[in-house]
Structure formats: structure tokens, C-alpha cells
Amino acid sequence: MTQTFTREPRQLGASTLKVFPIGLGCMSLSGAYGKSDDAEGIKVIHHAIERGVTMLDSSDMYGWGHNETLLGKALSEGRRSRVVLATKFGQTQQPGGVNGVNGRPDYVKAACEASLKRLGVEVIDLYYQHRVDPSVPIEETVGAMGDLVTAGKVKALGLSEARPETIRRAHKTFPIAAVQSEYSLLYRRDAEETLQTTRELGISFVAYSPLGRSLLTGSVRQAGDIPEGDGRGRHPRFAADNLARNLQLTGVVEAMAKAKGCTPGQVALAWLLAQGPDIVPIPGTKHVQRIDENLGALDVALSPDDVARLSEAVPPGAAAGGRYADAQMRAVYL
Image (cartoon, rainbow, N blue to C red; front, side, top):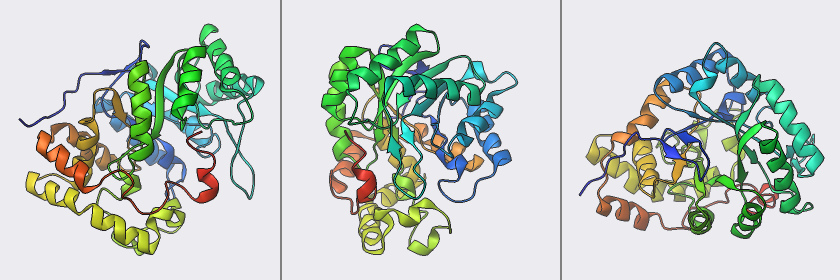
């Protein structure tokens, strides 16, 4: 029996928040993947909302405040009530080096106030710790985040790139509604290990980079396809030998897309949606037409055999190149 996906909202953990099955990651609207344009970015956000997307995902480190400010502009004039607004704190800017991290309780509250001001809102729906601070017990960080809920500044809490044992400790301190981590057909190992814990605890899983940073869309065939200034040019999985290996792995996605009359990206998103109703992918884009393409994944019919064939063709750990460069990997999955 083939499976397509309803547009019924997916609940975030035990919170009151419900979201459209596919969200929008907003990082690319602040220059992460080459030059971005604010006017076009606002059009992308507006189009996503008009198409029914409700989860908008930002962070105070995307453009170091630019992304939240842009999102605030896009949500003015009556759109705020139509979305579940998510943002993150915890990464700190270290000029010339790898980002720092700060999970101290006083910083948590100061960062929230700054985000509220940039977003132009009175409450953040879902507030994540972007990176775990290994120097601060997670109980102290999440305790401060819980105080924000009590104060009415935040509705629900999330963690990003947290290990299962960290998630357990955090959830005992204050209920965690969602855990965000990278999850795609190409990058499964950490995510699927984490899913065992989130499902046991009734926590939703928000999947960022669900298209493998474009590797699963077929749009990059060689390093020269990456524009100048695009962060993918420095990413391990796009290095020449790694890229060739990863493109071999994604051949099954392209073949299935051709057979079904859809795009490879739609197949990749459909595979992820098929993993369970507790998963909400948040693909990002700078282009209005990509919103429509991504939402088309909800109409892709996958049979259990299709899902199994994709899973077997790209098993956990098969992708070449790390999820981040070595220095950045030391800050994830903690």
C-alpha cells in the first residue's frame, strides 16, 4: 500500500503547539549559503505562510541578529498569529574563530530579551538551546529556560544537537517539547539514535538540513555548482572525493523521483515524513518556487517497499564527509 501524507498539524511533544508537517528553516535568508536579499527573504516567508506553513525556525546567530530582525519585519501586519515562531540561543560570536557557547542562566535570560526585541514579539513559541554548553550543567540552563516559560516569555522549550543522556536530564528539569538535529536520508546515525530517546519521552524531532544541504536535490553535481561565498564550499561533504561518493549514494533517490514524476528533493522529504508523525522537517530556501516544490513532498506516494529501498540504499554512516568540519563537530551532539 502506498502512503501519502496528510496536512494535519503535528503536535510538538506534550506542548500546546501544533505545526504544519513541513516547516521553514530561515538560516539561508541571512547569507549562510551565499548572498541573500531581504526583500526576497520576506517574500519567501510570506509565501510559505500563504501555503500553510506554520513553523518558522530562526536563531540569534543567523546573521548575528539579522535573521530575527528580518523575521520580525515579515511577521508584522497581522501575520504573527498564523505561525509557530521558533528561535535559538547559546552560540556566541568569536571573531576569526569557531563560535563560542554560553549556557549560563543569566545569559539565557538576556539572550531571550534580545531575541524578543529583534523579533518584535511578546512571546517566543519554541525556544531552543542552540548548542549545549559543556561547562554548565544542563539542569541549570534548562532551569533558566523554564523560568522564561513561567514568566510568559516563552511557550515551550527545545534543545538542538543534544545527546540522548543530555535530553533525559533536561526533560527531568523542565518538559522539552522538541529536539532539533540534522536528519536526512544521507545523515541518519545520530538522529536515529536520538529518536529512540525522544520517542520514549514523547518529544518531537525537528529535522534540519533534511535535503542534505542540497545533496539530495540533484542540484549540485560538482564543486563548481556552489556559488562563491556559499558556506557549502567549505563543507566536508562537498569536498571533491566526498561529493563524488555522496552523489553515487543519491542515485537511487533520483531514479525513484524519475519513476514517480517528482523531484529528488520531494522523494527525500517524503522518506523523512514516512519515518513517523513525530518528525517535522524544516528545509530552508531563498527561493519562493522551492517552497512549492518542498510542499509537494506531501503528495508523493511512497510504498513501504519504496521507503525500505531508500533506507537500504543509503544506510546510516554511508555518507562521505562529516556533518561539520572537525572544529565544529566538537560542539555538536553533546
